[in-house]
Image (cartoon, rainbow over all chains, first blue to last red):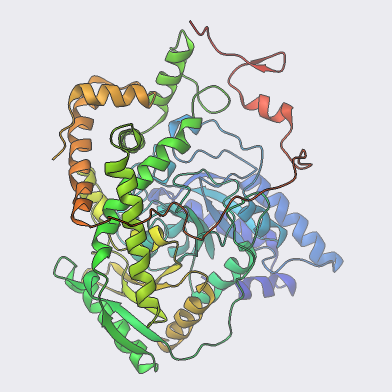
Length: 468
Length: 96
């Protein structure tokens, strides 16, 4: 796949056109139909927008920094030109009356959304196997999962269908599929990117980010979508500005993420990346973050609690699918929700109801939020001495389709190394770092302090260059 | 370890407004018991005198002027999304 700058240059110079770039991307998507990457294509609107951009180029009018660049959006981003399903039956007929801020900003710069990618329903999961539309297959192996929940977006970029794709990351939903499919994925600092128009999952950790084939393209996209948004009051004041170069950093390699429970090939890739960092002049030391092992337990209390609250709005009354079998209002709620959510949605909603219910609130929810404070303190202590932290993204490369579906805890454990940064609102990248003996990709994770997104990306970009 | 019974599941389903199939109730009883068993490892952490964190960037209440937004979605567009709408109102079956 060509870099974004290569695509925009050939469109602006007239060597190519937005229409031909979009048509080519749509053809590539069709060629990979058996991977089940897209829930729907937005071809008609995409081609209309392409023609509009080509006309502007012809007239010598200004076009944006991403003019004519095709992209894909996870199907929990509200977009025009088709349906937004969140891969859940209850939204299977939902035509969004507005667009997500991230999509709007990309369109203002001339980027063109060609389709909506597959995900675990409501982004609940780590494999896309919880999608009402069936799982997406791994870019490298049809018998392995794409990862998730943003699996479709990761595979769309990995197979070169589009140079970048939007995703959301609540506990690892961008980083884990990025690692499983050999692409760059970023979960920025909590609040760096507006979540307006993205189907809410867990509001205290939901973050919007992207996948791209290289770090420079990731920076280009994040620069466009970052920033304060009046429509999302949790967004931080503008701070993200990509940096040209960076100084030598002090890097902490998280010891607890490298124990015997972690796949040998994953450990080898992380250690090799650490060596390459040293060779590039960075100082890498082992550090300890003992409380990190509790992050997953905090996550599976706090997130279901927030899920149960956020998903209360889906009631079959005002939008989405209504059960046709209900005779009275109470039944309408129960049946529309019973039919409209997948098993994992129900599991999380009910755990949320449990941990928030009177009598259990202190023992679970409050306990988890206090534990979260301990985790944040532990991170802060490390960041007093280290610029960034390094470790695996996941304990193993992509697992088999169907391998973990009957055991929710085993499925959740795939998130054990990505949830700590989520619980603390920290920026984290997943960057390609090798493969196992079967050729399955392995990524490494770089974690920084809040608002250190630009530094992390610069370190990753310079590291990427040392590997070429 | 907390053990969730079929009755507990049905009670949670009621709180969550979810109609469940019979087979779902049994599976959920096992899954929820296991998940609660897993998260109970937090009891190993001493959190006495620790303040909870609900919001991670130090945000406090954010206010805006109480005026109608100019780029809000229109009433007609929103009503068009409703499964059933009559006379500018969303229609539902009888309440009782």
